[in-house]
Length: 302
Image 1 (cartoon, rainbow, N blue to C red):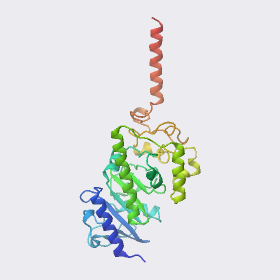
Image 2 (image 1 turned 30 degrees about the horizontal axis):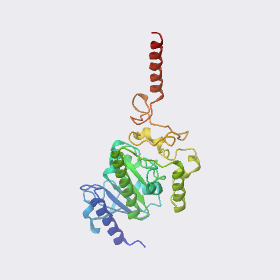
Image 3 (image 1 turned 90 degrees about the vertical axis):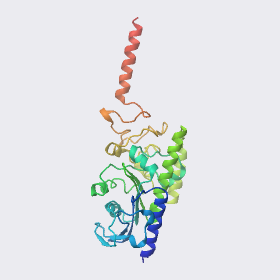
Image 4 (image 1 turned 180 degrees about the horizontal axis):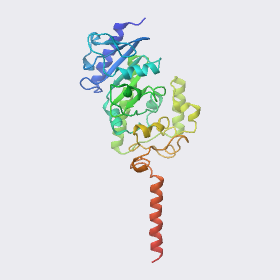
């Protein structure tokens, strides 16, 4: 039997952690917990998550209609309910705006893989959703292409959402992700990111498998994919506006991608969108070669 008051206390505690870590300014963020098949406990709108009390929380049905609570339910509860409908195993959802992970959301930079062991084991590839106006069903639906392959997502130009079997476990994924993004940005400032080699990644994936954590990279259809190339969600990049600019894994891991996935999203004017750190498109390479040939012919004719 669910202890309602205990769950309320847990939500308030996670709210304090979110606020104290700077993951939710002012009234940002929201937290929910599935009480039954048709009842979900959630935080209220326009309320700082660092100062919640059990009496502040609301109960809604699976369509978002408020059933109980003296304060109005979160305006973004549709996001939580969409995840819960798609994943019956999910009990809790946490949404907030951790600054380092949200920086990747604003830059639309994919989270690099094969850098930290803990991230490989607990997170794996992290998708970035397409942007929609928060609080709408269209916004909530942006998680659907990814919801079965991960427990944490970056919401484009917005923040993060993570989910799991308890309130604390749902929050864990966000904390791990933001700590990782902070480390990446600090290392980038030092001038270098060192990536694992493929055998080292395979050892971590085997450890992950033994611990009971699924990873799409272990699926048979992913056997020819690049373990460190963000291949799990790469086919969504063109729709979501994601482009790899700052964090490019070294060859061969960064080039041997799945045959059914584009190596880079289409960028402006049909270029590959790789940015300054990516490889040139085929058209650009052909143009450079043409100019080089013409210069050499001109020099030979002197």
